[in-house]
Amino acid sequence: MRWFNVFGFILMAILMVPNMVYFTKRKEETPRKWNNKIVEIIEQIGRIGCTFFMIINIPGWWSDWGSGELLTIYLIVNTGFVVVYCMIWTMGFNRNSVLAALALSGIPSALFLFSGIAIRYVPLIVAALLFAPSHILISYKNAD
Image (cartoon, rainbow, N blue to C red; front, side):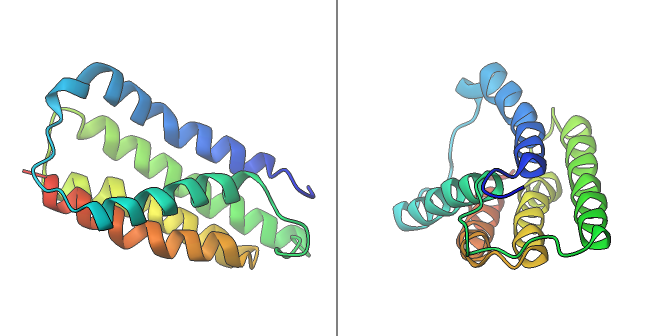
């Protein structure tokens, strides 16, 4: 794995499935109660950055796995994040509770931050630090 992170690509694809299902089935039912353009812009910059940097490794900006143990830890922890995310998403699909909103925004945020730290990839860490607080705040403010 040099520039293309196949593991990151698979993780992102799995994370996107519940979101695509949700927005295709409920787009009209999802009014935003809270709008803050600055926070939304920061969230989108972080979201795009996290998506890009989870999949694309800029040569010289990230550390290789170095050992099979680090790759194993990366895969186990991130698989755990994705499994828990999908379980919570499935259980909370018909609810818009604060707890579900915080879990469904916090888990991907933790996944991105952990991934950046694990491979010492500063652009992903920065993107995650932009995405996490803004995404969690927006999710919290828009939950019932």
